[in-house]
Image 1 (cartoon, helix red, strand yellow):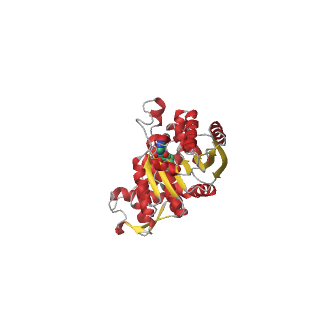
Image 2: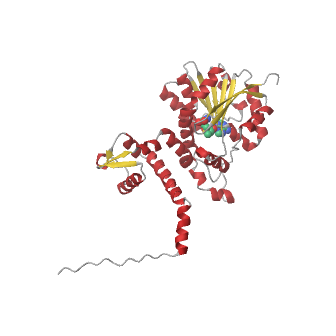
Image 3: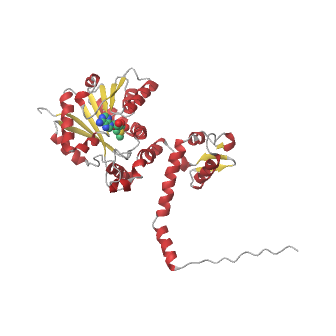
Length: 353
Ligand SMILES: C[S@@+](CC[C@H](N)C(=O)[O-])C[C@H]1O[C@@H](n2cnc3c(N)ncnc32)[C@H](O)[C@@H]1O
């Protein structure tokens, strides 16, 4: 005779203190925050491995090489996790992106994520050390400049290049100089959009200049653009070719000079005015914060505070810097509905100064 299997007795142990402790944690919203943090890391990893490209090209199964080159055990669990988070769905043995997954992995979404997780992750994971002085930004802790350049280029190209091209065209500039050009996306895009433009890009980072030259070659504009290594904040030492420019722009780089105080920025603007007396425009593009916590404003604020970059600076504070310089601000272009939200100041040498 078969023995009758008895279910074991189940005893739930609860008490008020334990229930309150758990309620406090669940009501705090922290469980969702922890999940969001892991989704961010997971998406960053998805984009950083061949998995995303393989899935983007349509439903794909492990049997079709989806996991090729990856640790199969981890990859299978990882895909299952992404299904449970609604990023992927499974149909038979195939994995595919859901609508949410497509939005999360758009070029803009991944670039925004890459700025915070990839480029500034090495900084935000060291907040405690920076706060207590166990580590200093620049020597012990640094953002990943290569990734920052890459993601900024994607965002800038998508949201801001049209504004710069319009502003340059409106002032009749024909040869532009992008000061702090990073990987050269702006100069290359501008030349692609306007066949009569030529451009020069200058950056202090030789790796960025190599990337920029390669981009120009790939995009077929290498005959109209030059990229040179130089210090944006020491214009008297720039390679001679830079002085051929009649339209200057400096995008998301000038604020870094506030590290040396406001007067240093005023002096630099004066130097730009003096060295380029016939400039048609100096377009200064700077991110603008609203301090309302929307659209990652406070995340943006935080990474700048941690890396001592002299941001945030409200529009009025920029005006007072320009006011002290020999450049006058003729017009402001804004770009709502973009990230980072930018404000573009159209400057020209002030008559009689
Ligand atoms: C936030 S990225 C912006 C890149 C590009 N202008 C854009 O908007 O996408 C700042 C760039 O300024 C460059 N940079 C920082 N300090 C510089 C300096 N002193 N001289 C020249 N370039 C500098 C960095 O190497 C980096 O490429």
